[in-house]
Image 1 (cartoon, helix red, strand yellow):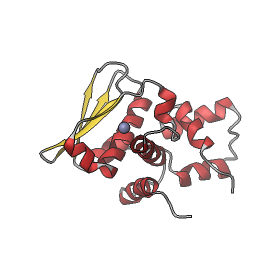
Image 2 (tube, rainbow, N blue to C red):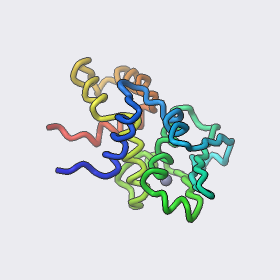
Image 3 (tube, rainbow, N blue to C red):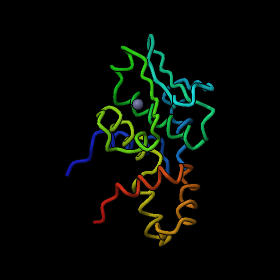
Amino acid sequence: MSVLLEIQAARDVISRFEVKSPPVHVERIAKSLGITIQYGAFDDKLSGMAFIKDGVKVIGVNNAHHPNRQRFTIAHELGHMILHQQLLESSVHVDTGTLRRDFLATTGSDPIEIQANRFAAELLMPETFLREFLRDKSLDVEDEESLSELARRFKVSTMALQFRLLAFQEP
Ligand SMILES: [Zn+2]
């Protein structure tokens, strides 16, 4: 089975920036890719946005949200930047994510959002890193404390981690 385009794109970023362990510094990576990040206290419903104007790449992040959520927003918008450049050149892409679960899930209906979410999940919680923790540290994912400990390592929300682990298929 071939690897999905968005997953491969996230892995390319991880290897290009030689990330060896979590947490993945998404803000630093985005900036290194020439993207300007603007923080603002937007309406609570708005998670973030992305656009490209006259070649200038901008990601907007709602800084009223939890830092972990801001990291996910940056990763999601970075996914749009890498995967959907043409779209961002023609209009401002706004992510509302009224339903947090929808925003994290990769089973929604909009293919653009699914791609960006898959990219974000792989970038923030690379499969190889996660499997290493699950295997070597014999982590019990049923245990709430272990799960939040792992989420802290990756600087992601426990919910994001749960969604990520759900997507894993046992070999
Ligand atoms: Zn989006």
